Image (cartoon, rainbow, N blue to C red; front, side, top):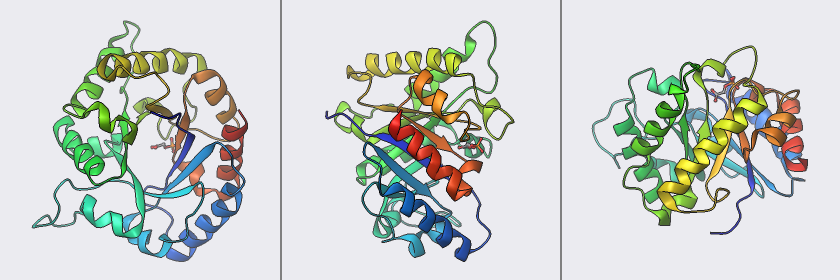
Length: 252
Ligand code: PGA
């Protein structure tokens, strides 16, 4: 596998409120992302904005989705198929986000979704993370089980289409991010689990961090946390700040 670029993903969630705002935000990011050398940027808007933003990405800027149904088509009210996303230029899909797990998405469903997305030629941004960081280290077991279950039967051949986003649930939508030195410990653990599974060098499957990233903490999370990139919620809705984070990641 060839060395992967760094990755900064903007998870817009159910924002912004209007298509005009979505277009403005994408335009601001596009301007800023043009000059990045070693970093890819992915914007993941709500499904309804994908078509309008399709074709507006180029170079280091990519379009992503926040979920995808594993079936190709059929009677699944309210769902969008992984295979329907490709026509809008979607290259990445966030899967297993904690906000979707909370709605009932199981490891088994997430595994099916990852398989479909990868088979469809897109990359899966596979979210894992514990709800509490206990002092006995039980959270390591939680993360390992999520990785095993989510990547079950996914071959080494597809491993470069997998991005693991470590998002400790207690740090998502919170006041503060995880401390970079604690992150480093978990990143090393995740890379070891992946290496045992696939036998690949640790940088081949990118590991991202997500959870209350902002322009103040982004630099040390990247430099000291051992990750290849960031998954960003709230701060991805502020174009200027998000672009600044992409530049910090690029120069770290
Ligand atoms: P946050 O969200 O950056 O607002 O904490 C991160 C995420 O949920 O992906």
